[in-house]
Length: 401
Image (cartoon, rainbow, N blue to C red):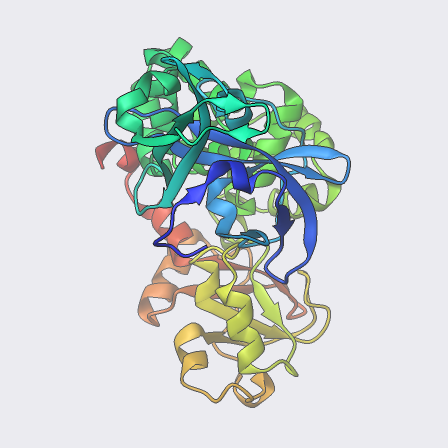
């Protein structure tokens, strides 16, 4: 569907759900719509999809575009926990055929948009009367503002949806100003991956307070959605019993990197590093490296550098051979092998190096990330400049933005 054309919501129902590689993995069962907030039109919050035997939620941010042949996602990463509607959400199937001022709601149209509040907004509502054999010719379309009561969920619920739709850093600042009751309502209303993004923007003591108030199963899911270094920092705020309980509740593949990070002292390179840098073998090409860092699931700071090691490529890897910045990769022919480019630089740091020395090393050599290796030269992870900034800025800096 062209970006200039409206997307008719009813036509999205039952469409295949397609990965970036073109594989159909399920189908769309419903659309989740957020109400207007006074500053924006109703927005598409996400999709309800049937994937195998699971009915799951897929955030609108994961939708690359809508096609007549299917809904194309921008990554294969999915949260497979069962969907459950949250405060302030409207389901398309509950709006279709709803009586409204002597007519019925036949469809909604959406348009792509660039906004803090969502990538797709409701533009119009199609109204008409149904006959036994189809739709009446009297079907008409009206701007959503003329029938805004269709999307009314109450003032409090609409405010929660507005907060959920802000940039995570803005939601985090707003959350700190809420009463305990409203904060708990907002936390309950958020999808796990969105809450994880907001948690990463909060001071660690606030993160811990929110996490401790959750059921262990949900707390574990939120930790799984956080960046590993942020999740490990949060776990380090909890006592040993709480840490153990949450790690046991997590998926073993997600818990493994956190267990490794928790070994290291918090104010060291090991405590700062992400255990999931982009790592490739020396036989890989520049084209393969650029394809990896181009993936939307790779955080921007992590995508700034590709590390080259002997196999295996999962930390702890084989022997570290060197690192290449994305700028260096862009300057080389796509077919160039990484082995022909690496020279052992930048030099790796030991996980015990104090964080202030890590910051000085990054600044002295104008680096965006540093490899962290053990005594055998095996890559354990990487410290990125955003992690160092987060630690070296004054305590409470988030509240002064």
